[in-house]
Image 1 (cartoon, rainbow, N blue to C red):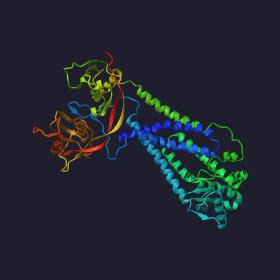
Image 2 (cartoon, rainbow, N blue to C red):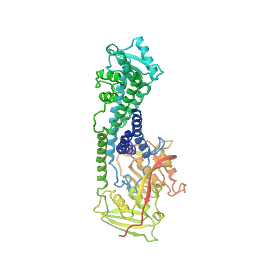
Image 3 (cartoon, rainbow, N blue to C red):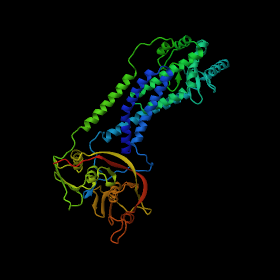
Image 4 (cartoon, rainbow, N blue to C red):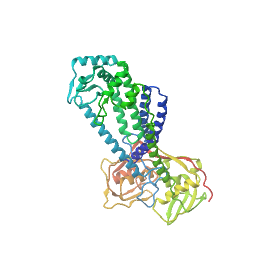
Length: 545
């Protein structure tokens, strides 16, 4: 999986923990002011719609809008004699390791896939109910049922079938709805009670509840990990049944008759497919009490456990992030920062033993080295950040990995220069490195590494891959380059060109000519290459030594 895509999706899933909880909290307040089932149903549907829209908006905001062929570009690091390492690591911030993000995304995919599979199987089962052991009801009953449908306000044709596989009346289908009745219901229950129950199912059809229920199930599958989603969804089902009960009472004109019909049903819910809509969905006792005007017993609001569990999940993740963010950052034991004499030019940065030295360095030079970005990727900050030069001499606690000075320099920039920044992805025009029409002129290496040997106008590859070459070409040209060679092996090669010019001067070819003649590769101009930009929000002159 693409690491940036995994990170964006993982953070989207994490952000939805507080987003879903906030939406549920607002909904719980709004439903108090909703005086009838229709209003509460509308508010609950709006809340669930916002829950679906929130992660979509978050993901789109975090992901750059680019063509599908674009390649996310990561700038190279500043190189030493041989370059085999990727860009400098980011500073420790509110983030989770890539492996944790991958696990979060994989678990979400597995969970959502399981719920989608369940929904598919239930839909197949519900659709087969219309043909398996289902028979047309007698013609005289068909006529009365169609008159009842017209009285409720339904003009389209509806099927009425008696089935041996259902125990309660239910609606199956959206485009061609069918009402299934238990095979013994027509003979065992008085006609007026049958019509009362049938009015409830007809109300589902008039309100297009089957479609809404299907969309509900899709939302539950996508956002299955958030308890507030299940709570709001259950509230939608409860208010939906209340709305249909009101339609049934209005059609029959007798609330007691309809309540007796509900009470007379012997329900077995466990074996019922949730994609079908039945008259017994929701709390049957509460619905009967509501129809008869009996106040239900007071109980703890159903939404509190859901919101509480979501808040607990968010608290655990927040504590993990805080612990990582507040952990000790790599820092120099001591560092001296002085202004560079005006006669000195040329930025240098190197580590030797336990000493780190930067000479003739601007703030932008230090940022480029510490964070592994190129100059064209850096924006913002005062003018002096590009013109004032410093010498830095620092002591490390002990010699370490090549990335160690970069991490320590990140801390020094934050503490001594007050550097504050943010990252964003912008589209840039650039190049794509592709294989020339005559094919590559590269020799596959038998040994990995050491990578690229660097010199002015010279690259010496030993066990180098195309990603490493592409990063170095980006550094030479100061422009983003995407690797589209589709070459995945390691190669040995030598590339020599005239630096600082695109024109051949006779001593050596230009970089573009050298690529084509010596390596069988070429650069093609492309648009909309997404490049991660480093935006300086604030920075000040360094604090005294």
